[in-house]
Image 1 (cartoon, rainbow, N blue to C red):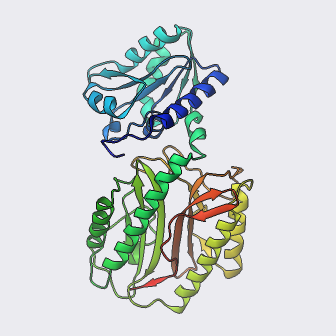
Image 2 (cartoon, rainbow, N blue to C red):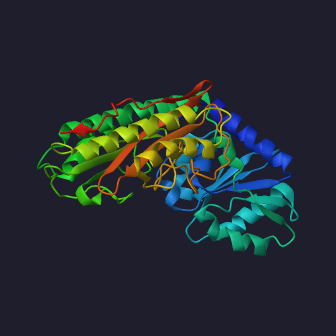
Image 3 (tube, one colour):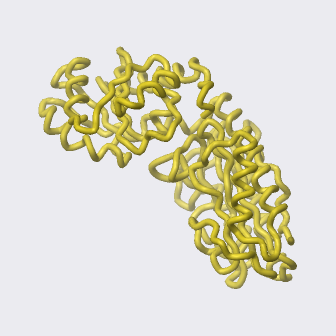
Length: 381
């Protein structure tokens, strides 16, 4: 986030109250959240300190307490409000400190909700069971994630700003790319434009791939020069206050073949059909089925097992929102709701050529609309 201006405190107060209400409904005395996305969502804490354990204790009827390394106190105090900071040293038994706080809040027999879908929880899971033998420790995974699915007006505004930066990043990459230009030079100019426009470090770096590396989904630039006739993929996202708006554009250095152009047209049509199917009340599998129905008659196969996934608030190493991926795949019964935001994605192959097209979209009352605006036609440079 902007390191000197926090997002509105009322937004975080609303989120915290919603989490507390879920805890009351589930009769949880103390909930513990450890993933960066969930902690940031509740408190607004946006920084690079999450490499060390953070544990946010939420009591339905009390103050929230954030455990983090003691040196993070100035940042936590400046960026958050309504949160009690509990600093620990590298030599401390953090689980013991958390246990003492739980006992003071709700007693030794407390019903504790622990977020278990976060890798950070591993450090405290077993010790808490040992230190609290009388407690009922249940899995609290999904409490905050479910609240994050439908975006507030504040969140959508951040994503729209991120989408503007995504468009700028792509247009910069297309302008800088050309025969003989190294991939890393293209990436450097994309980063320059991103930072100058007010973007922060995204969950994934910009994926700049060309030639025979196109099928590698999560690799980025090398120092290899772009070759005449080679395909080029730019998949990237702007990031504002940790909110992302991923997009991708695809083309060729020089001229594209007739088959590549045909594949581009099929891809574009499927992309638009997927957009039209993404509306309130539909199910994720229905969106996938409509999208896939455009590919089958053309003998075109998906590279990915879905046609998109939910995005929003996220920290490295992903822009998918933390643990797990909520994607639009063929068996998903996820209901599409107004104000959800997706990375709508069409990555296909005809066996000889690939095509990759994606956009950030928001679901409105009448249906989904593109937030990223760069022209979707196959580019030739």
